[in-house]
Amino acid sequence: MTRQGARQPAPLLVAAGQAEAVAGDLAANVATAARLAADAGDRGVRVLVLPEAFLTGYDASAFDGPLPTAERLAGPELDPLREVARAADLVVVAGTALQRADRRTLSSVVVRPDGEVTVPYDKQHVDPSELPWFAAGDHGCSITVDGVELGLSICYDGCFPEHARAAAVDGALGYLSSAAYFPGGEHRRDLYYAARAVENSFYVVFSGLTGRCGGSSFIGGSAVYDPEGRPLERLGEEEGLAVGELDPALVEATRARHSMHHDHLASLGARVRG
Picture (tube, rainbow, N blue to C red):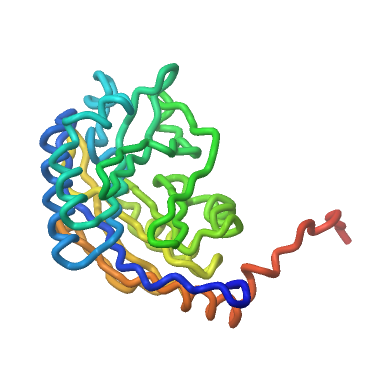
């Protein structure tokens, strides 16, 4: 709840973007990201979320090859995206496969309007199929935009209620999820992220990779879910943006009406079998 006398942040327009990524072609994927960002900026969006591993492509051929480092991503190769973010006053959160100093990770790149590029979050729940390449991150992460705290999440993270719950407990009013779902995953995709929204009475911005990437196909389904788990806008498999307004006042009102966010027990005690 907002502290008495504290000013409620203004509503924030957010978007989940989706498009095809090219395996191993950073320049092509940055250009696509910049195109989506320009569209988002034209629509007044303040935060754009792009899919998992979007900058490198989600494919074994990309994962087997050299991956960008955080230092490289802070350099001129992201200038097309940085310039759009600056012109549109837009924060972009995009997925990438990343070379850390001692390990490879699936990570979130944050591009801010002032030109700063950071890679603050590594996927904590690595899917078993990804373990040949990637190690798990060791911390959660939120970013703040216009006074609104937003938790970061990458694909399999969103399958674990405690991941979103940790962000909500720490003060997040929204959960930004970059993902890549294969054909056949439609039911779970649509269930998980709506559930994370209603469980925590906050917004979920889900961005799913779509189309072909290397040897695989992906199913998109990007959406913005409100604090009751209803999609404000949802895409199919087409390139585009799902746009919605994140209203902190609605989060507060929903949590007052449905108090699960506050009613979690510290312990359920011992389990007794009768």
